[in-house]
Image (cartoon, rainbow, N blue to C red; front, side):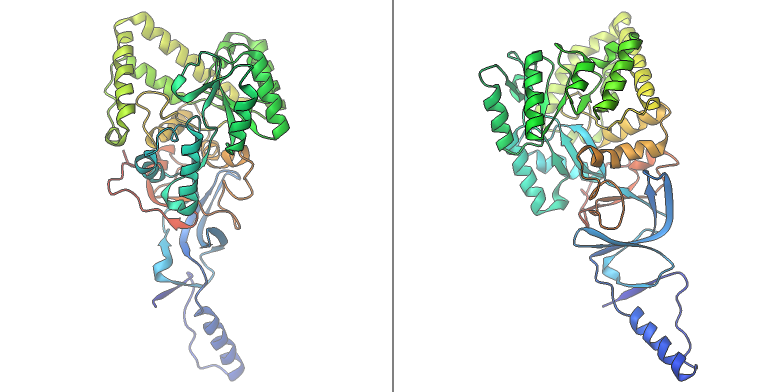
Length: 447
């Protein structure tokens, strides 16, 4: 078996020394020639650490049984079988990305088309924001058996909405009669949280909040039309998706400050999905939104996208409608900048499956770029993409950063993402639970 001795300063000593010294040298060489018991090693790589806002150069990352066993400076001599080495020279490695708002569990064959795409864009974890609980559990089982086949999934099953739900195909219409039974059923199916929606009556939101607290399970989603954003935060809604209802606070400074305080006090999170608001404008302007990933998108989604495009392109012929979209988007961006300045914890999501021409994988990186355009520090964006989800799911002891003892979910990049956030697309290798992911033959990462 071929092997490599890793270390900048290594060289064999001449054996012309006195016996005691010679014996010591021979012992050291013998020790050096013993192969490390590892499954994979990334050598001489620059580790991006968004939590501590630093890059540690020239490191060797040793992986065994899906766990980072050790991280050592490249000057330390270690023997590794050549077949287990990934040369990280001149490259940058970061913990895997999490898309914290997407929809991947609503059709049984989406694992075949979507999962390889998500992994090819470095997304090793997702928060599915509404689908089918049975499909989700089937996908989870598949990924547990073969982690390289898809990202880690957390999800709620179907949307919980009022009696006339906005999305009837993917929702449970809650009533006083079926609420308890519905929550018990979802809980028994081991959903990770409940997804609440816009038309839930106030008393039902309160009942869901009480059930969640009793069962120690979170609820997240849209803010109901029947309660205030401040009330939702005080009920311990874990996250607020998009800027639904929150954008109403733009002109109400007192209520906005009260909301920010309530979010902090109750440890809630914000997932703005800015890309969907940008896309609405682009559709209204009649822009060509084709991307090569269009060819892998499910036909059902394609048909829906074209219907939305036809319906909304008319706004381009109405300057007033288009101006209103642009004005609203500018206000939304100002709100997000304010939340950033006020240290409101945020997550990154793209809402694939919820908005037209949001592409799996690719639009997640678009979302990161939008944060950079708003003036977010790149380290903070990368933390939002990697470590914040681990905090959100309370798994930061095992995920979210590259540290000894943590799960080896990592993305190897050709260029430094701290210098330019667009470099998150320069993906060379994806590691999922310590194993190299076989990327699709046609890799659209660089588009």
